[in-house]
Length: 416
Image (cartoon, rainbow, N blue to C red):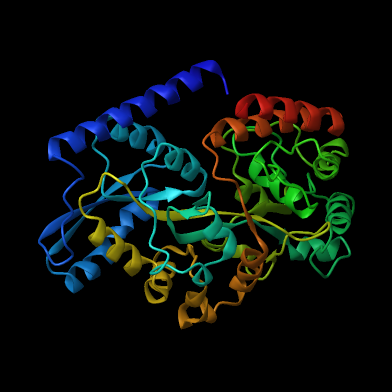
């Protein structure tokens, strides 16, 4: 990690510790906890579109708990990290919040999250990888709310022109289809792996996982120069080396536009793209499909999404736990899917009518069952930046073994 980042994080940790000590001193001990039946206001931060719509479910919760008022604040994903850090340092955190999977490690490390009650929230009720994003050293700090997993989107009409009637099941089949799209169907590109830039790790990590690799060793050290990592980098590089994908990252690039025009007939992304394609590209009805990720050793995506966390500074932990249980129940997970089209993390919700009747969801439930988490690292943002930066070199022609070695050294510097 750069020295400035280390200093900034150390300063935040010191400020948080000072605020928590002051809160304890002012209260004469631990923060007084309101009982579930008492009249109280539960403050909740929700992110992005979810934060804007969470109030609709909160109204139903309030009807069931007349003494509790749920006050929801919507925070943009682009500013949520800074706002959470600032609130932690100032002692103004809400009672609970929606928290993205890649933020968990930092806030666990800052000792800001209340452990979840594993008697009430059971691991078997959730997709394994979604649950694992909340666990550090055997303690569970959040409850999965919704899940995000990457799958393959491809144009079936153009695939038929290219001589294929089935989704590519392996890395080799995917590469062959990308070549055929260009050669036989006349597309500009064969696929759209991200060539560096923020978030490029999201399209490469499934390659790593499918090759049997890991981001970290069992003892928490980077594992980015292993044979599996080199294999994943080599497979990823072929799309750029053969002119099947753009070598340069375009900020704000809209893959859906190129998918609709046929310039890009195949890409990897998350479940929200189903709604995007249906809404923006009605002319493609029946001409595209979502499919499991092509496999190497396995077909393995990573799981993202959000969990619900309660902050250790809250004086309304019983109400926060009750609201968390309400939001993660199968019935409300199903209702939330109907409202937002985000995938339930509670596996029992998938058997309810709102989800059972949608055949397109089968690919996501199958991919979620085999997905793996990203580790809850304090330094995740810096660790991810390393991968993004080195993938940009790979896309421009750097040797995969060299990239793996550089990625490993840089990641060791981050964690060292």
